[in-house]
Image 1 (tube, rainbow, N blue to C red):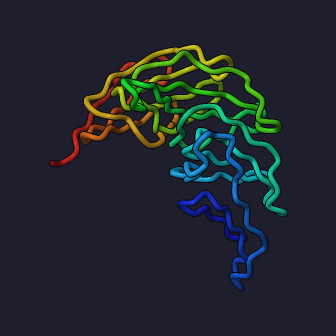
Image 2 (image 1 turned 90 degrees about the vertical axis):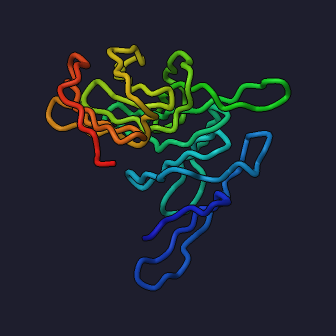
Length: 212
């Protein structure tokens, strides 16, 4: 099967060799603005289920074989990150983006991290709200995960309850998905800085500046 999602939030499933359509799914939106069903992140497949988030602040889980909705949950006003699946713990992690109303205008200026059950979409925990939007994708290893944001920081948290373990500052927005190699975290920011970080302490081992 080949599965993809359009800018309008429609999920298509095709035969990989013939291109024949098995099914398509148009996500129902619990948001007040259903035109925000667009998806700006990568859908993730696991165990015959597809998990994805969309700009209407909703996470969805659909059956890969039938295209039927299993569950959906609106957790924010905007989501730009890819779900990080943790099947051994029956949970997924998502970095959200929160809009606030300033003088009649919606401003996207805060974020938090939400942990949901993979099987049901029920809320397990969510972190405190922090300044800066959260387009960065969570990256988990063991009982910890790291996530970046537009407030120029990378934060390491406990997967048990979201408690902050350490925080590292960057000179620019920290987007994308950080990588773990052994006991080190590798993360980059918009202004061409790669930092290698000790995952236990949050100590920056090395900073590499890309060529201008």
